[in-house]
Length: 233
Image (tube, rainbow, N blue to C red; front, side, top):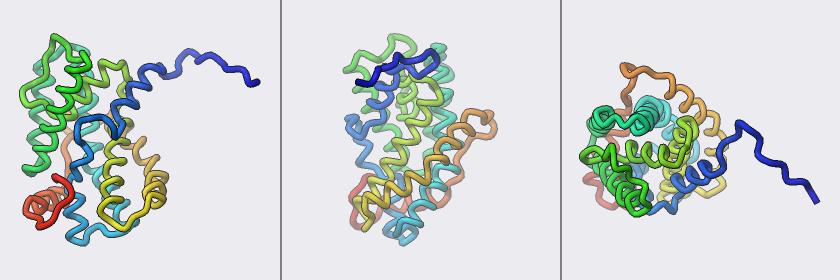
């Protein structure tokens, strides 16, 4: 029988790891599966139609969107929750909402945030102070959940990026003739990009933040009037 070795000092806290897995699980009841973030419109427009073009799309959104917007703001939100800094929470929440360039992207941020507030309240994880900002977005509330679970910044950002990628590929598998094996090939190739995006996001100063995704914004805007839709964005 193999000897079970104790967890060595310096390894991630197993309880925090389980909390992260809970937070990024597709089973988390916040409705993230209902949103495609403009990807469904990219299918309709013919911009994305196969494994190669899908990987190019998600890689671009990761580098020009999450790496310069969602991920660094998530790190700042976690620090603000830990410090009890209500002003910083409000500032970064408002900043992120202002960077959601279409009605659907803004609704997604706000509705997922509101759903996460309800869930954390039911789990007795909402702090008495500071309270969530008005119209709390998903990123800021994800930061609260990660902080309450004692998840370190790097792991929280990586988990957030992973959940985003997994959701994008789930959208593609539902709406394209793309098999699960093709999705796994994309994940395999994207793993280094996820870790690189997190490391970069943790080094960016405030004045270098901001997404540069005109194609996604256009696709999202066109999705609002798309004739037939499976997803809400």
